[in-house]
Image (cartoon, rainbow over all chains, first blue to last red; front, side, top):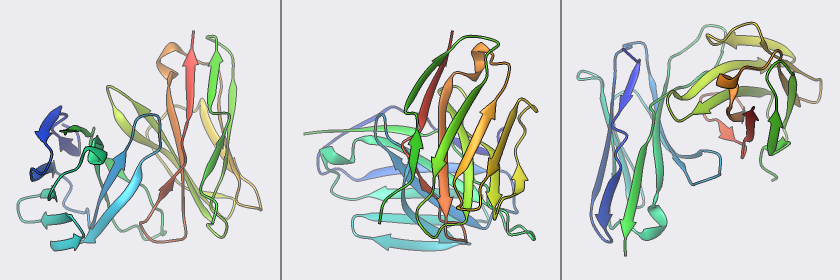
Length: 114
Length: 111
């Protein structure tokens, strides 16, 4: 079993829809939870990150973390064609050495249809 | 501020050869991490360097190695290339903490 599971999609929605993207994980040591967006032929771009449980909002994007269920979500409101990309969840624990490596989901490909 | 740069962007090699990829982090960032991205496995952590020292390593064979220079630039090397090494290799730099900023990647094709 992979440490981070993510539905690969693909997911197609009409413009203006609310999009829900989700990941589950198995390692209870994860403390930081991130969402990246990756356009075709580009590197991943950090959208937002949260520490421990709770919600975080940034414009049309809302990230939720439920550590008790080991489940994280990203919601996109009023989706736009420019949101069409692959969305990757990523997680990290806290290392005593300060080492910093991320565990990624495989990504969900989203298409927003005009 | 300039972003993370990686060279070359595309590379074609044959089995058995070796390859060196280069990464220049964002100015002031001392941590550089390398990841391999494939359609089947997604993004997998290779190793992280901080102040010229390898601080963490993923589960890859010893054919994969890296180093970091005093100016924080980093290189990774893959020796004795195999077909399965075909992938997008991504470099990420970090100022500290968990935020990592990725470069555009080097697409390696092994024939």
